[in-house]
Length: 519
Image (cartoon, rainbow, N blue to C red; front, side, top):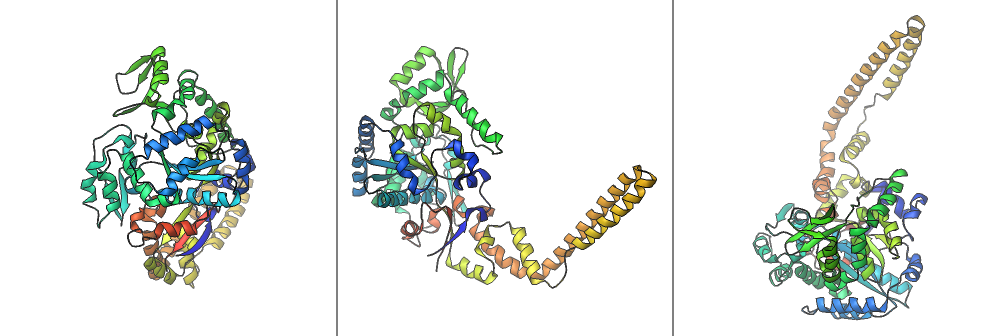
């Protein structure tokens, strides 16, 4: 593959707040500690406090979670290294999308692996472990129930409810039979494990174990015990609601749109097939859409003795992550980076270091056939990311020898009406409004005529437009970024070195769009 790069602002698909963050805009500095530059990690290391007791607990839990897996030597070595005070993690998280879901899941993991390699080269006195945090407690099954392959959507049908990590994946067998080709990796993952979380750990280990990637499932009683003080604070003091509300108001006051909203209580009740919100009504705590109710005394007993029954939402999951891992940076997509900025005060309140927020790598993969067609179109790579109508206008304007603009006529009409209004005002000021209406009507008619002229000329260049559109429709399925829609099985079976090539080409600290061109 050949690599080209494109500045993210030229991709026209990222929010202002995200671009301002990676560009170090002054207005956002109160909402983080360090920018995602490799030379900032020494400061982050000094800031991160992580006790030996927490390290021992983490290693104990991970060892248990991996005991039935044939983990790569690099994984075992990394897990044991977490006992050492000079070992830190770089973490990404994602839902348990079936068959890995969209491509950016792969890109996230490649980013954390490469980040650890570069950090080790920069700071050889420390160890850096790449971690994938499974969102096993998430209950939004619809979001993870499908994937797109070769333009077709494949969906897993099941009536299971609750945390998706608890789901029995055996019924995916019916879906496996619908998918073209053989996929032994996923057959073994889904048909040889009792839960979706265990299946995901299997295929992630198979794909990335040699790189030392450690998979953690935080749906664990021992780990939740370390989070008990936050659970109690949220249910009784509601600090997160107040603090996130403050940071959110500040971000909005300087013109940014925010991503998340904190509730009074930011925990779900998790038990069996239930993962429902906890609400306080009067002096009782109730689990939404169930008959479960608890007194203050009963809920405190549960926090102490069954902390695994409390599942944090998007507001407190990041804090949980940072409290149980010796973590320096979180690698996420644009939306994730934005909502983490709303959480700075929550971290300060609980005396937890705020991690460096690293954008994941972004990419577009252009296959050989699409590349050949695209070269014939004569367009630039940057134009692939523009709206279709803008590129069509460029094609028409570049290949026509006719004047399609009526701007001069518009200017002339504006001047004529301005002169007429000036004369009318001396006679009867009420006539000015009438002339303004006539001007607006005339300009509207001219604009309509201009569009008709453009459409008529466009028909003479339909072949060139079609060349561009044919490639665009393949690389941007349904108008969406490829990485947010396509699955890696669109590339991996024909190119088993696909992931290795990503590892070779992606630079985790280069925040540009990677365009990978098959040759």
